[in-house]
Image 1: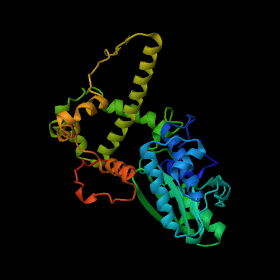
Image 2 (image 1 turned 90 degrees about the horizontal axis):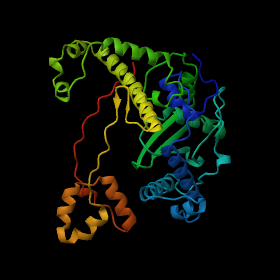
Image 3 (image 1 turned 135 degrees about the horizontal axis):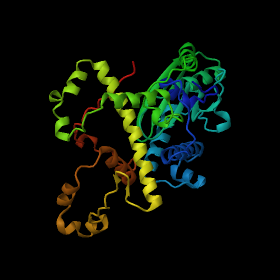
Image 4 (image 1 turned 120 degrees about the vertical axis):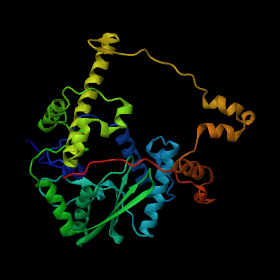
Length: 354
C-alpha cells in the first residue's frame, strides 16, 4: 500500500498505530482550531512582561471563553514554575525541530526551556499518547544543544495534568526510526476515523464483509438480551476464545462506522430532496421538549430555595467548580478540594494491540 514518505512529527503517533495511515483532506475541526488558538495565546502571554493571558488574547484579537482562560492561565503558571527564572523560548523561528532524520519534516515545537533541558507541548481536548511526537522533538533539541538526553513535558491544559518523558538519543532515534521503517501493513485502530483512506482501506472493507458473513441470519439484540450474553449461542461461542471475540468486536465497530456514514448520506439526501422517506429509510418527526431557561430559574431561585434548585441540577464536576472558583477568587483563596467527593465511574473496556 502507498505510505507517507514525508512525515510531520505530529503524524508519528498515528503512523505508530498504522503505518498505512494517511492524513485526510478535511479542514481543521473546531477542536483543532481551538488548540491552535490557545497555544498562540499561551506563548504570547509567556513573552509578555506581565504574563497576562487576557492581554495576550487581546493582542492576538482572540476571544477567550471562561474555561479557555483558566486553561491558559494554568499553562502559563506551570511553565513559569518549570523555568525557575531561566530563559523561556516562545518565538516560532527559534522552535524549529531539526531532528536530522530523512523523510521526517521539520516541525515546530511549542516552548523551550533550554537551560533546564526541557521542551513543552500544549495539548487541549482528550488525553492521548504523544510519545512518538515528543521523541522527534527531543531528538531535535539534543542535536541543537549537543547533549544526549532531553525531557519533554506535555501539559494537558483542559485536565490540568502534566506528563514528563525523558529520552536518550538512542531511545528517541529507535522509536522514531522504528515507526518510519515499519512495514506497510494496515491495522484497524483508533486512528482510523482520521485516516484519509478510511473509506477504501482494503482491511476495513474486508472486516465489513467478514462482519456481514459472521452475523448473517442474526437478529438485532434488544437491550435486555444484551444483558444476558450467556443465553445467546453466538456470543457464548465467541466468549470461548477471547482473541476471536476481540477480532469480532473490532470488525463490528468498523461495520458500524460504515453504517453511520450511510445514514449520514441518507440524511443529507433527504434534506436535499426535502423528503422524510427514501426507500426503507424514514425520518421521525422532530420532537419538542419544554425547558425552563437558566434566566427563568435564576429569577425565582430565591423563592424556590437554592438547595432545592441545585439538587434538581445535580453535582458539578470538580473541574468546573475549580474553574469558577479561580475566575472569582483568583489565587487569593485556596480551592476547597478537601470537600470534593469521589463518584465512581464505569470502567471502559478496550482492546489492546497485538
